[in-house]
Amino acid sequence: MKVVVVGTGFVGLPHAAVLSEYGHEVYAYDIDEARITAYKTGERDQIERYVNEPGLVAAINESIGRYLFFTTDITEIADGADVFFLCLNTPPNRDGSSDLSYYLNAAHHLAGLLAKRKNMNRVVLVNKSTVPIGTARLLENVMNEHGVKNFGVASNPEFLAQGNAIEGSRKPDRVVVGCDHEEDFAIMRRIYSQFVNHVRIRYLETTPETSEAIKYVGNTLLLTYISFWNGVGARLGEAHPNLRMEDLKIGVTSDTRISTWGSYVSNGAGGSCFGKDIQSLIYQLNQAGRSTDLLQAVYNINEYQKVYLIDRAVYEAGFDFNQKSVALLGLAFKKRTNDMRDSAALKVVEALLARGVQEIRAYDPLAIESARNYWFNPEKNQLFERIKYFDTAKEAIVDSDALYISTDWEEFRGLSRTIENNAQPPYLVIDGRRMMPDFKNLVEKGYQHIAVGGTYLKPE
Ligand SMILES: NC(=O)c1ccc[n+]([C@@H]2O[C@H](COP(=O)([O-])OP(=O)(O)OC[C@H]3O[C@@H](n4cnc5c(N)ncnc54)[C@H](O)[C@@H]3O)[C@@H](O)[C@H]2O)c1
Image 1 (cartoon, rainbow, N blue to C red):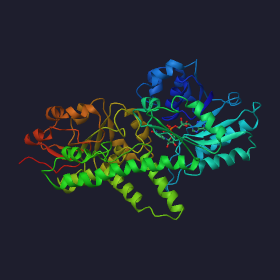
Image 2 (image 1 turned 120 degrees about the vertical axis):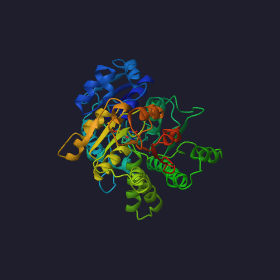
Image 3 (image 1 turned 60 degrees about the vertical axis):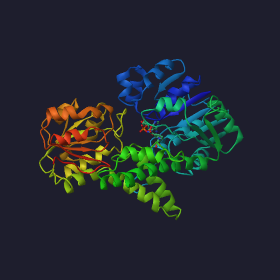
């Protein structure tokens, strides 16, 4: 099949690379010229400036120039393509609704090209972006407005988890395809032929609206489960010194009906999807006049979870952040990515600055460049000049008065020694990820410790 992937970000680029492995002729298209120029080089450092996923560079280099092509112009290519995957960003508006401007710009552009095509074979336009229920219908209207003929629309939501995009695309749990017409289902079956009738991968065909809803319900349910552990499990651990959080998790999730995935406590779930998708679903249900109490509670719990440890440091440890220097370890929203979208660290930084810290000494193995870009513009907030960037955790800790762990990078598990060698008691360690199994040794040596799901510990 001749396939065009429109938008080559975290979703589009891995999707294009994996589709090309199945022998489809894939054109990965983006309006961002710098991005496409970088991808064309096939070089690791160039590609990973934009999308950093294990296995991605190898997958691109396997197919580039043979099955996979990068372009900023699809004027010629559009004629004769069988399928277009729309992988555009759909960020939240202030009111929680989805900003469809990027998506609609691309849709109108495509419609203009498709209206003029000479090859009149059936073409399917597939939404891979997460879009409100009813957007496939909207896409259909855009195509009709431009007079496009012989087309179908489909919803095929992306379920990948960042950090596992390539493997997740090669072996998804399920592939969901929502179409209106059998001929469009048939085209989609050819695209995903290796998953149709697969023994382990569920290949589900349904209506576009159901498919769109599956994405929102799935994502908000995951966030609800995570927020249950944060809103209930963590609170219990913080109230009872003798409660062992890890044993609580094992004891509860040994029930085969209860998921182990998500049964951890943390300083909130970030990333480009959870917060955005739950806000969008709340907005969509409100528009339909339906109650959203549960979703609203989940959203609030998750957002407060990102900063509540700062409040605990003030109210439980009596720590005064004013004029202090704080080491911030971990900026990405989770390990193995450089993506900072909706990361807890963004809120932690704002909370620390609001409490008057003099300096934030930031370190992350992958996300320093993303962070510099994010906090660069001094006009946005001059306080961001108080953020300093370091190449190692050790350098960030030196000369700081307290430490905040925000991301679950494995290297933070061995921090105790670094803390002992570089910070003097009664230095305060705030652990948003429970990364320090040996924290009791530190407390015995005079350090203070506050972790999510644990009581405040200080030397006797
Ligand atoms: N990131 C994830 O983990 C994830 C997972 C599942 C679903 N999604 C959904 O997938 C969609 C894409 O997310 P993403 O993280 O890949 O976004 P992204 O911001 O990383 O990528 C979007 C890309 O689209 C390009 N673009 C914008 N306008 C364009 C146009 N008119 N024509 C061509 N290209 C254009 C941008 O330059 C950018 O490269 C969103 O709806 C998101 O909610 C994301």
